[in-house]
Length: 151
Ligand SMILES: [Zn+2]
Image (tube, rainbow, N blue to C red; front, side, top):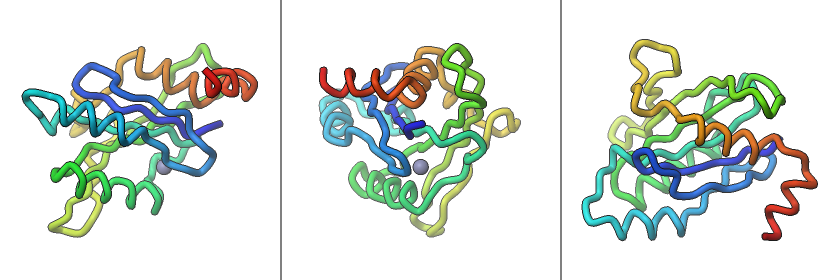
């Protein structure tokens, strides 16, 4: 599988990226341009989402560096979620999600909950379009990925 990602602003997908194995890839330029062009910027609506293999809801050192970089660039702590699909079946969107924020003052990563923890922020749950996009980009056959990369 590939660790694909997408970025949401509110209900809208503003960018998605096909992952590379063991990497965290976001289209930073696109997200930055989108956010800077908003008339009213709401940090609470910006949400970075990244797929990990099943069972790996924890963040990696690379994820942490990535989040720290986004926080510095945007000047607020971004929401960063990790999604794990339960199986390889493209028809199934069963998943788990954990959401994090890096707290610069405490110098630590805060886990904001994992669905279905009661404290999980319901506004960070993904819609079926988000899940389908992430599942396809992460689990469709390599031959299809190559076609998409070349479009
Ligand atoms: Zn990661």
